[in-house]
Image (cartoon, rainbow, N blue to C red; front, top):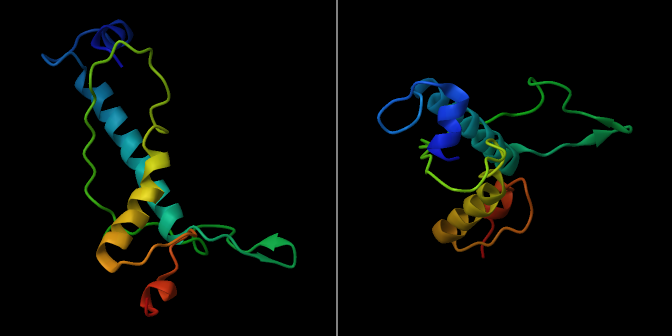
Length: 124
């Protein structure tokens, strides 16, 4: 998003061209979307029993825990492109990044999500 678009949408700005509260909103939105995508990659299995989804609420669907969450830094760069979705841009790269990191650490290439930890424990 360009600073001129942000300026017209937000009014006064900081020296970098962005209003701090708008920048913080983008940070929070992107961090939350990335954490939700990591949750899906690591824990996002949905199971059915008797034709019904078993994970009906947060007590039966495992979310990413604070001790599992990586530090996420958001950097907004100026661009001449028109603004687009703010929560979606990074989500498509997260699952491949997670599985590539697992491959780099273990030498095991995973081809299904969510990550199956039992497959990681088996010999190569």
